[in-house]
Length: 145
Length: 145
DNA sequence: GAAATAAAAGACTTTTATATCTTATTATAT
DNA sequence: ATATAATAAGATATAAAAGTCTTTTATTTC
Image (cartoon, rainbow over all chains, first blue to last red; front, side, top):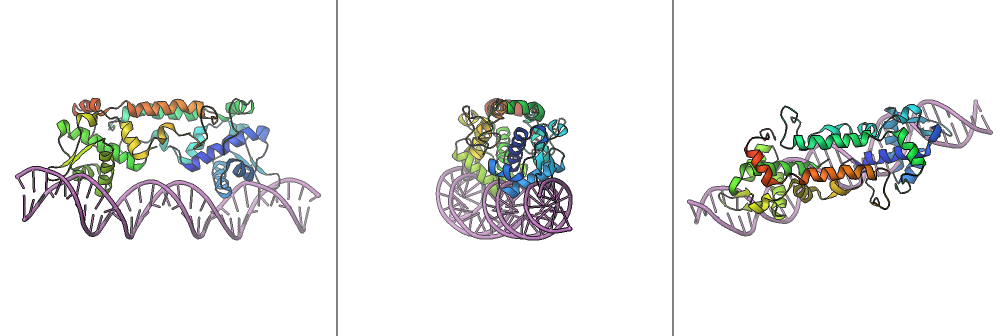
């Protein structure tokens, strides 16, 4: 469904969301250690997210990654788009490039609905709203490794 | 979402369903040509499906692949399971092996629903019901290439 | 200003998935 | 018998994804 890279990115975002209330900084090392992601791989993904303005970063001692008010307005869908692209939300289930409303594949109508549901699923989780739930313990984040 | 192999397998099944009313046989060559799938690759996938009793085959002249009453009772979900396995229907969205009702990941509840919808989407298309629609032209099958 | 810290960048390797090709065997219709 | 077409196994090639390593750059702290 999602690439491994994307799974890592989502876990990382979840981790930062939980640990970076009020723009507290989290090191790439912490993230990679606590989530079991290879360090350099995690670093690369975090760079992509930082470049896309989905997360913020600060170099140097006490540097790290963190989330501003602005960053927190992003949804999980933004993370998926930054790493895997928009494909999962829009691509034809049979992989047809020519598939569209006008020239639909036999499964088009049925799966249009499912894709919308998937899109909504990722878009409905906005990090600012989610942060409260994470911090209040409504959701597990202990076993992301 | 689905592997390329799985996309090919679904297209092949759709093609056979459309062209094999009353157990008429369809050659692997036709399938591969008309759907733009490399011949040997298509043949391999068709073998897997035949072995799984999802389609039927007949060797020799006038041989080919076809669907019996029994075969037609299968759904698209069976095809997906035969090629890609059950993962897409059940796996954790974050790829966690430990994710479950008891130890859910932060996204578990939200995406349980989506997975159910995906499962239903594939299971609801049973080939016998679908065949009528395909033959009546309710669905495009012209541009599967 | 020097040292330490940590992100940024990019080159590189490994692994996995996908695709292609070759060569045979088996079954069956004519 | 012969031709046809699925079955089967395996070698090879290509591409994409995942993972590793090294160097550079920016920033903070002392």
